[in-house]
Image (cartoon, rainbow, N blue to C red):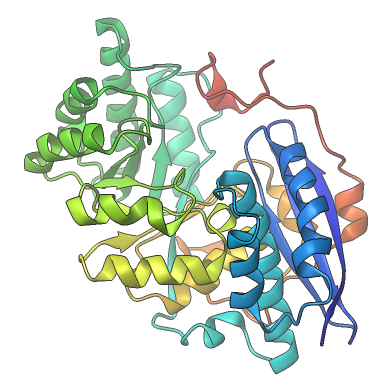
Length: 386
């Protein structure tokens, strides 16, 4: 079996463009991959235009390690976000093909199921005014859908530090959400790499009474010493540190793991070279008793890939999901992904990834001109900023 054609397609919304790749073989089997890269869609397409004829066409889709190793190594230049996104989309499409060829769901090819359901947390639910009343009502809507965990960034457009008024406002928002969801629901606090260490620690102390299940990316991802400084000061509060969505290769995790500067790793499978890399990272993290909770801001294919990872990974924690609250129609682009029911996904069904790309539906939602800026006012409403 050989890969005979690769076709990129783009689904556009007002705040994210989602790129799909359809990978066809000379035996008629078709696999699909997907990624949502922030503000750099054309860079990914440009890379794929060069990489597909060079490394993908004519390859056996069963030879995943060979294909991805060549894509990673043979251009000689270091692989960053754009390259790892391209690799990931091809890689997950190959897994989809292999599953269809063997009539098995991908998680069984990755070692089999270690759980019979997958806990989810909601994101994208707080597209409202930054007031305690609005956040309280929005959190209630999350609870009404059965979720037992939800994540949010209450910090507005903050960067490095916040003034005293904003700090009190943040505490009020988190207090309102905790009141809305009760004591038993997990609240996960997203910091989006906004703060210097002292501010991250100060906010951790202020929010500790509301028992967040983690603080995510408390400092920018480029300075491990700063993360370690913040993590060491936050540890006595008993709040785990989660990070990793902006790390794109296994090698970027080495020092983080060695210094044990985080408790939960969050690789984005679609920007980390795919399922094989994520499984390797999870096995490595398990040696440090670290959990893995993949970042996922994509649509049906990236969600399906994350579920196959979750089903087969012992140190998996919880799975992010946007699409019950932010553009739920995106799931119709590739039907087949199980819904969240009572706070959990069931295991994905069917051979391969278990989803089928609807090309007509994707083409009916063309790419949008988007600049999504998490440091703009009201970014949380997920309206593109120019």
